[in-house]
Length: 497
Image (tube, rainbow, N blue to C red; front, side, top):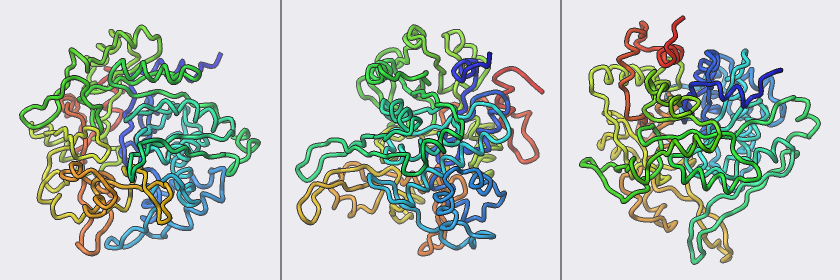
């Protein structure tokens, strides 16, 4: 009997974290899957990464290979024709604009979202039968319908959804897989006298690929897992998805990188102004609950060691999710120089991470590596002209159009201050708000060149708190000053080849 996808997943000891934007690209996910573990591509911002790589000339031909296998040639060719630059653009030339996702995406935006997610998953799955998942942030709601279809078309094995309650995902995935009209309700903030509410986005996959053509692809329906920090969140998700429950959970602690859940206990800060989590109280991850629930789960945050894996197994988890160690790996999308500096800082005891309550426009706590020359440095932050030209972290709000009718607008606390205020944005969210979108793109070497300033966007680096694993990997460092994904896996599993 051929093992089911869920059975194979349960046997997986290591989940590679789905780090965006472009950190968990197809190279990293594929390298992890080739070692028999769960490789995960980040869907977040992939529709930014693909067109900028095309403007760099698609140097290794990967995107062209994906396009040649894309089952909706018209959409793929639209993206290729708009963004491909043979030989690549000049280093001091600006990238072409990319549409910002919203509640009524036009054809080019839909094409970008569908094709980019397809390409990332297709390339991650290329040449092996290992498990490949895609990570999506629930908070980034407008792209979900289209990114999810693209991943399904490429045969993605599972979805991992965090940064919000992803209870809409199981039904959306099911509808898309059955070629039925799918919907996703996006949150809309109050404004112009209208109370906060939701707006239903709908998408009929038959408008881009017929059911018969879809069935010919022979892809299996993907699994769906949720990232949570406490049993309460899991309980809410189980209640809301009782007809189509999740296939498992990733239980993430506050030491994990990127966005963290907010503390649930009485709000308190440490001497640096970072949130304090009551891990013995309301912020307790409650592993016993997940064990008793009977669904597979993996433990994330401070999990990169053989001892952490054994603790997880003792708690009846299937294994651990590892992010930061893979983000430093040779195959991750981060610029090599940034990774080398991270490794050396960790070895020298100079690596420091700050959990900011103000940096991310999402409102979630966000971890930032404290390093000069990045958006963490106040000088660099202040010298950067505010601009919002990517818009993935914008929030929807109600407003009146010129005729006085109720409509939706979009705003971001890191956009130009006057623009944000004119959109009735909350003044207390402005100070310290960072353009995460542009900063993370710069971290993977795809930052926009600003002609006015004569320089590229500065990077923004995020990671988990714990980098103690570096000492155990020091002996694996190559001439490039880096280690590989396989070195991380071998260390945690206690294996060598």
